[in-house]
Image (tube, rainbow, N blue to C red; front, side):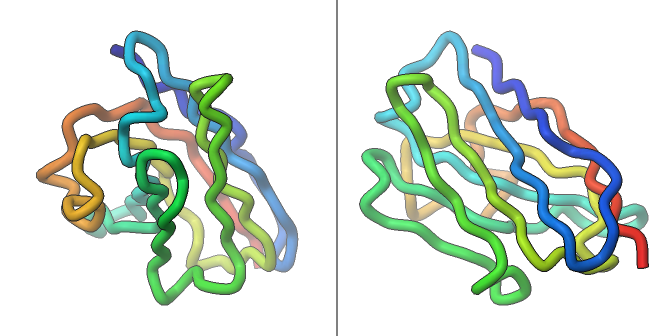
Length: 123
């Protein structure tokens, strides 16, 4: 199983980025797909989740109204559209997968992890 995250980069505050996470070796439509992030010196924190089938989504309070999660299960890919970026959004962003939506906020419960992609927001 492999989760490949991409789309990170350097952007000015107020700008936008779209992250992608392509899954291989698993059928993403039966998994809750989750984005976490980790800033330097900080613990990994929940950002957003999409339930299997995409009927439920969740967001951290800090990104609500700015970030949107979506998925294309035909492509085994989940996306994170990030708008109105702030310097405090700077972090390595990771995608993860788990069978249970209830686990979405707990990084220790995730079954699969991808490599991270770095997002840097300059002020």
